[in-house]
Length: 296
Image (cartoon, rainbow, N blue to C red; front, side, top):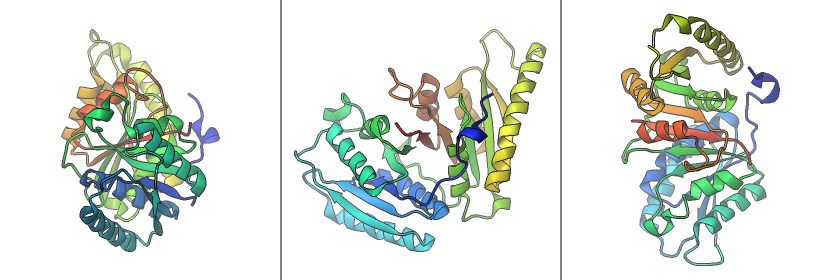
């Protein structure tokens, strides 16, 4: 197992965060995540809006008021930034480029943004969030809302960190940030190493005892370091599955998970930068999924 403890920092700096906004109701989950991470790391949030022709100023004012209230409740510094692209309406690549340029100008350590379906005329060109994830020089935190109207509860009580491939500190750090204002005793963070089994092998097969024991030992060591470093109680678990998307979604329902946080290592292909299994987890999850992506 690669020793991530030696290669990756188990904390974020107080450098700024960029929060791209189109001022739509679907973006509130991303606002919530960005400001809780900012509170945890001591960062300033730059709420960045790329101007796109006609604007709904009434809803924009309402959302700005809500952002101000959240910022005050968490004592987080923030600024609004407007970017005017050269063409109207701007294309997906131009919007993504404007966001990334703001990241460079503000020397931001991360972008936190809502990930959602684009209007039909943009669908063939991919989501803005996907384009940002491919080219951003800083880490990107995508807040996926698989079902309309699903919101992260204030002070979530149950958080799942599923590890499909690579163990990485960022999902654990975000889980810690989301529980920073809650009573630690009331929060359950479960870190689950997802272990995919061939269709012909029973889930409780005796011959899997040794490899599963090794997976559990290695993963418990990694999780123990997260507990010691982040000061959060985290329960490690080996999760044998038959179909990753379906079985992880069922685990979320069974355990009444409030939010899921996972790492994606920026792979490319039919499923954008997500692997097939990561895509299936996001698609089938009954709760909000936070996907953290490393810098390009």
